[in-house]
Image (cartoon, rainbow, N blue to C red):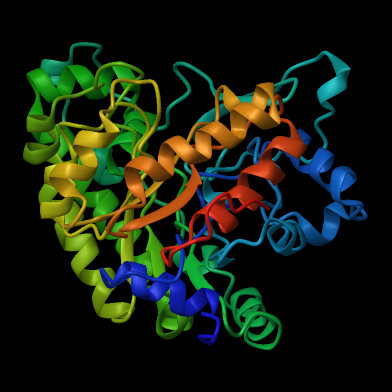
Length: 407
């Protein structure tokens, strides 16, 4: 009998374009974690004690996915374990005292000065609460001075070096044979963070009427993100197999929010440079690009930007998965595609059918890592999520299986 592959070997083979023993599995990266309520239900389902202080990796609890727990990943049998920089709290308003059941909203600001509101178990950006203001409401008259004067948070205070070193030591001792992924340094990428800093409407109008404003905002964000990644990867770069870019949602449910031509004009050169820098600081790692929605028109450009892995490959939004695999399946690793909106909310049987569907398309020839296509919300059934990963471990094997093999 051949010697069993380790998770690290499985992931590294896939990222190198080789065929592993089975499809690697991921969960709980920057773009595919469980809503807090689902996390607590998973703990109950697996019989694990709850300890919010220990597993709260977003200290401010400013998002709906505030926890990270290796114990759950052990139960699911995934191949990645994660490190984080601490800088993700830059996007987190301080909602530690917020009580979702109170029925009262709470407003707050992240470290950029962007306004957020907590309502029940949801956190949303507050329209109009953006930190870079213009004296005029006419985008054609917007000036660069407010962008130049804006002070970004201090990267030296955002990267928690001691915590990162402690996490690496823990992984070396507890998970030496697992692939390590570096979570993104920011919750939002160049496009989305621009929208949060100068306003969504102002961003879209400036793209059309005052391009220098958007170009300069992207340049400043590139410099800020670069310093965060440089400090982060100076500590963990030699040890990570995958580095996540901050998610940038160019695509909507059935159409894009901006065109592929807009990505090429305003953002492509900056992502190409950021990816080049990341690979210089983490020379053994591959880089992952994430966007929600229908990404068909963007995939080619993200590959040209230097991305090695593309997440989320979302279902039921117009993405043609078979066509994606046919056109780009040998040039990039697709990650995700596990539908988070329907099967795991309904039944184990529908969840099993979902795994078979996605493996039929993405598994052949390798270049695929199964993961949820987005964050899992609180309507997901723990038993369905558990079954999804059981099936994926059993049916993801590339070597021949006996007829009628079951778990």
